[in-house]
Amino acid sequence: MTVFSQMAAAGHEQVCHVADADTGLRAIVAVHSTALGPGLGGVRIREYADEQAALVDVLRLSEAMSYKAACAGLRCGGAKAVVLGPFPRDREAAMHALGRAVDGLSGRYVATEDMGMTEADIALLNEVTPHAVGRSLEAGGSGDPSPHTADGVIAGMRASLRAAGRTVDFQGLRVAVQGCGNVGFGVIERLLAAGATVIASDVSQQARERAAGAGAQIVDNDRIHAESADIFAPCGIGAILNAGSIAELGCAIVAGGANNQLAEAEDGERLAARGIVYAPDFVINAGGLINVSDELDSEGYNAERVRFRVASIESTLDEVFAQASAQGETTERVAMAMAKTRIEAGSR
Ligand code: NAD
Image (tube, rainbow, N blue to C red):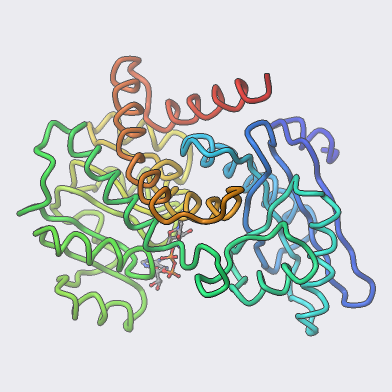
């Protein structure tokens, strides 16, 4: 497949290859859509098997960003950058080279953090371009996105409870949280504060100990999905929902912060066939994106506006669940269609 045909498959606007001879930096920036605003998305630093694998990843990730931003009602499009690792040794010079490339896109792409990037890297990009966000609070930025993602997950759980015909109250609920990192631990703290019983798992002993210290009951990570619970919240890795695990789920609702929870598209149907309410990941976990995108507002970052928008994940999911039920369609497909409708309206 040529690059053009790969771009055409999902409607990408632009793909830009970046090479810096001085530092050895090699990166690809993919802008999927700017119909609703500048393409916002993280820079991912990763060792890829080859260039084609990097291209496939950046195309897939940038497309997903468009749908996440559109569902969250943001005036942002979707884009992403990948740096083909290992990252050059002279980090400052390589970040500056990347920043100059981003700057050359004149705001069509706005870079932020993803795997392998830190706030300090964003500060380096900002030395050569204004088109990078995710600055620290001290630097007037939006700070750590994960508490906002956790707030959004709780808002999404509320909508999910309603869709399952349950009372919207966490008191006495049993919630299984897989992955107790930045997002998962935030979700656990909020659930415990609201009176839920939390069972949790993680592959890291340190993360398990922190969760146990907060009051969660630790269970086997390989079996947590099968535990009897009102809600299962994947907050660690993706592809956790597959034919095997879905058949074993012991919950009424799946609502968590992890990206790419479905291993394949058919898993949305498998969940629906079991009568399990599924909050599409790219809708429920948009809190962090909502937070960082607020730096782009012409009046600057506003914490109150962020809180309001993150809370609105609940009403967005109410709409997704209502449409899915009316159309007999999966929640994932309904959310995707909602995003595409908004993007098409934006391009008109
Ligand atoms: P993190 O690195 O802080 O935490 C991830 C946790 O998952 C770690 O404690 C890790 O040990 C654990 N983990 C890794 N592999 C696991 C496995 N196989 N089983 C169980 N636990 C495992 O990351 P995070 O920021 O909390 O992000 C968690 C998930 O949420 C990721 O999928 C991420 O893409 C997604 N997400 C995060 C944000 C955000 O604001 N940080 C926003 C949107 C989506």
